[in-house]
Image 1 (tube, one colour):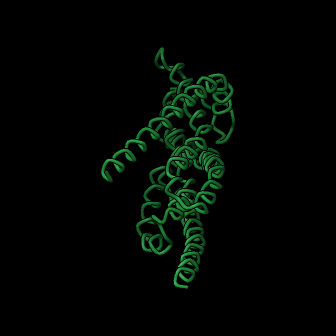
Image 2 (tube, rainbow, N blue to C red):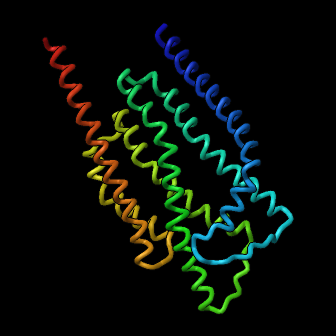
Image 3 (cartoon, rainbow, N blue to C red):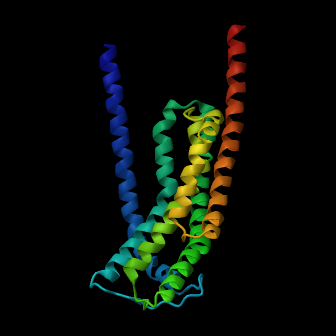
Amino acid sequence: MTEKKDELTVVDHLVELRRRLFVTIILFAIVLVGGFFVAKPVYQYLTTHDTNHIVLQLNAFSFWDGVNVYMKIALIVAFGIMLPFIMYQLWAFVSPGLKPKERRATLKYIPFVFICFIAGAAFGYYVVFPLAMTFTSSLNKQLGLVETYGIADYLKFMTNIILPIALLFELPVVVLFLTHLRLLNPKRLKKMRRVAYFALVVLSVMITPPDFFSAFLVLIPMILLYEFSVMLSARIHTKQVASDAERKAKYEE
């Protein structure tokens, strides 16, 4: 009888997951359609806004370049808009396993997902991307190369820099969420500090021009984000320990 009940519970979870995935996909498709309407102004801003003092003449090397540009911009816009909703669906799926306090606390983090994503994208676009463009352009000129860029390569280069940074800025929210689920704690994060720092150094070198200043400029905010995440995790963990101690004292009485 128990096995049957457990089996039904697993099936119910799978049905719930399928339902939430279906709703998310349908809504993403609707938002994606809206993304096509804003693709042109976004494209004009990204290609004419002077963030690096470099004038580029972008070219199409394929008949499908224009379609690919519209699709990529619409996908990025849709993903950014849908990110809070996706996080909410994730929270709603795991919330039945959380305590009421944990449920309320983790729900508050969802708006910060969007804020952190936008902050990371802005940092990548206005700080890291101009550094990378300036470095690559100056190196091309030193080699006597004629700079003829395709729009597809330009957007790919931009996306490969901005998107990882935007996602990395979600680190505090992810750490807080996992701490509330008791999957992470400050002690574990402190033990991982050396490995985390090494990973951040490698990442900062990979997404910036190969010079010390650019890598250092990107590495510092990343380290601050990690330490801020540790601090937030410690704050939540302290409250959890105090709550557990209080509950244990009431139980022993």
